[in-house]
Amino acid sequence: MGVHRQAYHPYKGPRTSERWRFWILARYAFERVFQSRILVIFYVICFIPTVIALSAVYLSHNVDLLISLFPQAKPPDAELVPVNEAFFLLLMSIQASLSVFVTALVGPGLVSPDLSNNALPLYFSRPFSRAEYVLGKLSVLFILLSMITGAPMLLIYLLKSALAGSQWFIENIHLAFAIVAGSLLWVTLISLMSLASSAWVRWRPAAAGMLFALFFIPAGFGTAANEIMRMTWGSLLNGIVLIGTVWNSLFFINDPVGYARAADNLSDMPDSIDFLPAWSAWLMVAALCALSLFLLNRKIRAHEVVR
Image 1 (cartoon, rainbow, N blue to C red):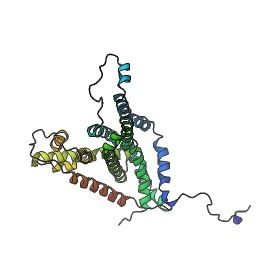
Image 2: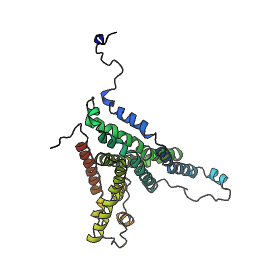
Image 3: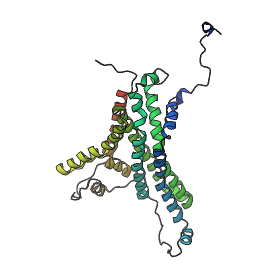
Image 4: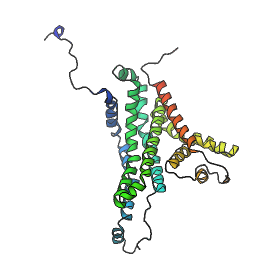
């Protein structure tokens, strides 16, 4: 058939719902992410603390099995592994530390290649908004990090509830709320910070290094300010102290001076000095998320006007 007889035919295949259109970006991003063997191996390693914790919780309710494995061991007088606020806080801290490395491996490759290769006009020439673009990229990190932070903690909580009974589940429902809220807050914060650093530092190794720098360099300035001015407000620049204060408030743990000494090495801090109030940590986390969104909004656009 001659070319002049070829008429335009619109696409008649299935269309993605507008509500889930952002998932197209996430779907293809997941395919690229798991092509890295290093990431796959490290991601599997991230589940080792959860497996150990699950085994410990199970054995604490099956002492006979433990004694059969170790005949010389004596039956414990108390619960082998007390599953309480301190237990989940410790495990969440371990998983959060591992999630930083996962973010450093995945985050820089989500936005920086699109900016380096001027691919944003190709995205936005299609029915994609900037919000859908950011949501599609954010969902990749959000799902990956949630699977190694909040999801394992909830699994441990459900196993403990199944072994201890419905009464324990009801009495400790606040632990489930703290796990969900704390994990969602941490995953959202680190994901937004990673995307923002990836958007502004287009070289992938530098973007990964910047993510670690955002945690350690401001923390150094904050510690110096605490030492010089004899205060604790400088800890607002310390991401570890910041998220730890938020988690403490969620788990109703209140040991501010001891936590400050452990995090900032303020060994001679008098007990009369109060640590960061929880509301200040919450406001700082919200400010960091808003700042990351602002930086993303400045960079994620189809074209730049040069004057």
